[in-house]
Image (cartoon, rainbow, N blue to C red; front, top):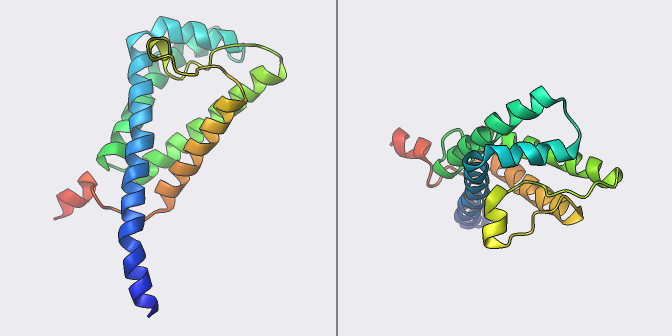
Length: 161
């Protein structure tokens, strides 16, 4: 009896993992591309946080969007998706700390999550409690993907066949 409930829940877990992979991977693909398209805007946003020295801000403005894009792509395609999901969870942890820091210091700033796309699509983009909640949710989804052994619809599984 237990075996049938395990086998019945496996496809649901696989589907949930695929859905979560597509959601979080897609979000990071889009946010990375939006920042890649306008690195100067992202640099100005980083400066408003007043957390890092200028050289590090410039470095992050150029390379963090590419990291977000590549990690999102890996999660969506299922290439090292568990490791990539864990790395995205860590990034979300850093984002939460940065947002909490500006909130604690009373600095009102855009979080910079979606760059110019936030203006075009009228997305909420403030570094506030809602942004922390969104990052916590994304972190939880990433941890689920990391802990899940589901390989359905991954490029790795396709190559193994």
